Length: 204
Image (cartoon, rainbow, N blue to C red):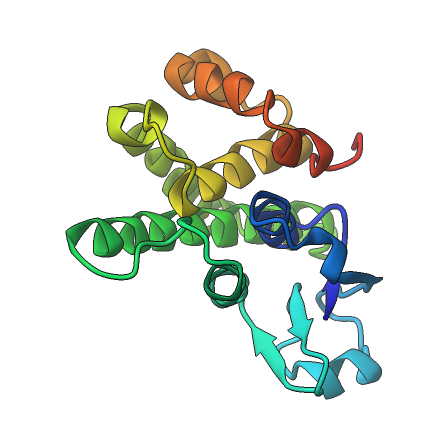
């Protein structure tokens, strides 16, 4: 299998963590790819018209899109427990992951607004709205001991790791650690896992 990725992508990080946890990392060839708003990439568009990272390309050529779907596929072929097969916990984890993915989407849009938007055209209210979505999401998980102290390592915890790691990487001065000490303690504990430590983004 081949995975298009960037070491800076929190979505690709999610898949890397899952692959390590499932013992599948050695079966995946990592293919660096660069995608940026407003920049054409015709070759990558042939793989994924959405131009999003990551994409998993199977040995027979089929393409699996979306980081969650890729993790679900790896979890199935690896016989893992990152996503339950059925029951109330499955739907809770999928809901938690959707919230976390939306938080990442909002943070990425904030990043683009500040770094890519032409100078003088920043839409501050739009930026603030998206940042507040991510911030309110952190507040939600600050009060979720079932996620922060859970005995199993699952897709919700992986997603939260990626959110907090991206906050450190791209918004180092946002103050999330002071505002949310339980999330800080959770992330420090998670960094003891090889999959989390190895996949951390490079220094900004």
